[in-house]
Image (cartoon, rainbow, N blue to C red; front, side):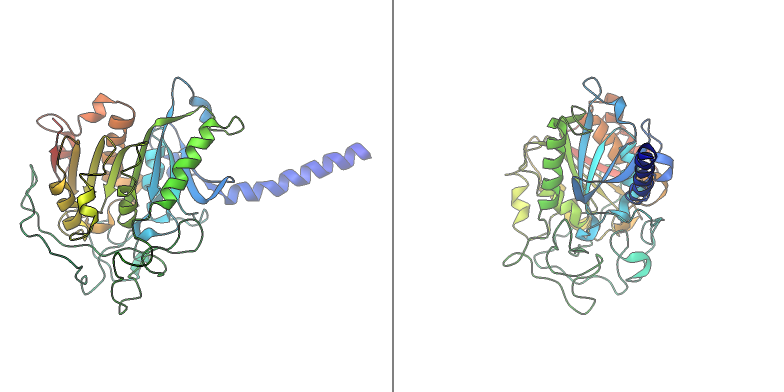
Amino acid sequence: MKKYLICTAVGLMAMAAVPVTAQNSRIVEEGGTGPYKAIMMEEPTLTTHTVFRPQDLSKFGKDNLMPVLVWGNGGCANSPSGHINFLNEVASQGYLIVAIGPSNYQQLEGPRPGQTGDVPRMGQGGGFPGGGMPQGGMPQMGGQRPQGAPQGAQGAPQRPQGQRPQGQAGQQGQRPQGGGFQGGGMPGGMGGGMPQMGGGGMSMGDPAGLKQALEWAIAQNADRNSPYYGKLDVDNIAAAGMSCGGLQALHMMEDARIKTILVMNSGFFNGGDDKASLNTKMKQKSVIWILGGPTDIAYENGTDDFKQLSGTMPAFICNLDGIGHGGTYMQPHGGDYAKVATAWLNWWLKNDKESGTMFTGNEPGVGKMAGWTFDRKNIR
């Protein structure tokens, strides 16, 4: 009888554990198209973030270490739900991705307005992250608006558009940035105006959530009790993000542990103090801006970042014309953005020369992709 009761108790405990596991993980798009089928999950040691990584960690070790990507969301949102196809696809190429905020594991996401070039009304399809410009256009940001942005090496003259600041939904994990608005929409509502940049309060580019993700990954790699023990390539770490998340990634540039930065649909605000830091604080070895063409509200800022960058830092800027601010994050397998970002990561974090041909040579692969234009510095 005693043995029966023990077995019954064990069985009930196992049954109780199943819903918890199912609730806190999900297979997205059958695990992605890469060689390592991915999973989206919540780690009990970091419930303020969402992890995207290969399902089978046994394939990684001393001879096949897994690089790390820390990710900031559009709108400073406290969930990566607007980018899960993109993040899942990159993870399937053999990356550990630690994204700010928990995710809704039962919510099935689809492409949102603004991710196919259209411009939704505010609130349609969730606005930011993933949405386009609200109806009625954008309020003007402070500072001078530079005219005559540089022409890309393969495209038409680029027309600046400006960028609005992004906010954060939710109260867990990464704290609200630059004003306490919800859902990643316009700060203070459509009639609330723009928050003041600088001065009191928290900077919109606060990288605290990315730093937390970075420290967690490094600690996991050194923890003998962690499933990631000895499997992570902590010498090859990238910071990336979309819109406000791109500002967070840029503010990781002083961290020498970051090897490359991906600034996606983002850039420092023109006329702000951060612009000068591009050439004084940038410590990582490379940076790429991935933008949505002249209709991207971050286009002016990102283009000017690239223009201002000097010295020997390898830099690349590319635009998918017509996609706008929403990018291709929620298109199947992350769309073209996933292809470009993965190639960049493979080149810089895995020393993959073939992936590097997307950005090098007389005819870089990015320039051969439909709708893409590019420019570069210190890359041949």
